[in-house]
Image 1 (tube, rainbow, N blue to C red):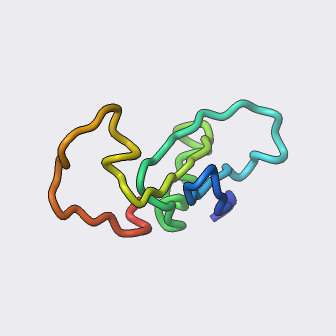
Image 2: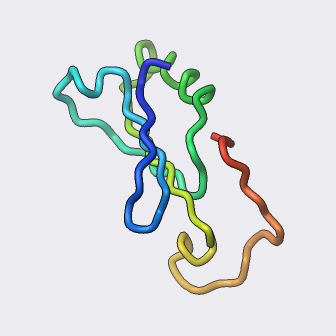
Length: 92
């Protein structure tokens, strides 16, 4: 993997921040993709990096973990959409 992953704390949320390979050397603006409820896997990011040169511009990814997905990531109080769903780390 040519880019970098940093584990950071934003408020009370553990997050993974992926910065593309040329982030520090180029003065560019990058799009940001937010992933709710997952950490970033090196294998998936390596596959994405292959596309940066040929098919798309690099981008930043922020993976945000939560202890209570339904409470933190739904816009209003609601019942659970999926019962007993367990998201494992590194799914992306």
